Image (cartoon, rainbow, N blue to C red):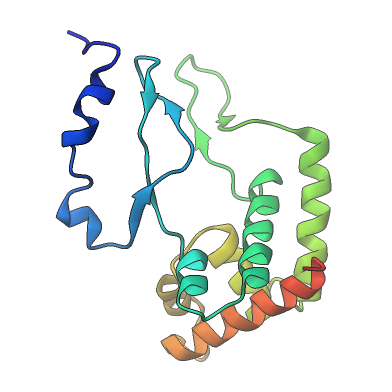
Length: 176
């Protein structure tokens, strides 16, 4: 049985928020934008603070570096450089998930490649950081464990320094 259309509005004053288990994984706030829930009513979404937003709030980066990182991530996803794939259960080919924008995707791909060139290429530390941390949304720790030199993972302060350098170069590259 479906709840009444105004169900969320009726319980909203009594709803205390995300569980304590969820809150221990980062700052959670109400999103400024509303969205339609499964019944078509207005939803009251919660939003997790991103790594770049947290770094800006803590004063580790300036707004221009956050915007540059978000721009790289936006272009990366628009270019479908790491697309999600889903099986077609009708027996056909594998299909791409998401909205396809062939012309916008090509332009975004060229802009990502230009940004990676400014960072020294995808195999350079800053290029790798941009690709995996900003684009593929790896955590900084996961990227540092994966990336190391000589069989040893990067230390956290070194990985963070590479990310800070990456964001500074991207801010200059994007003219922010």
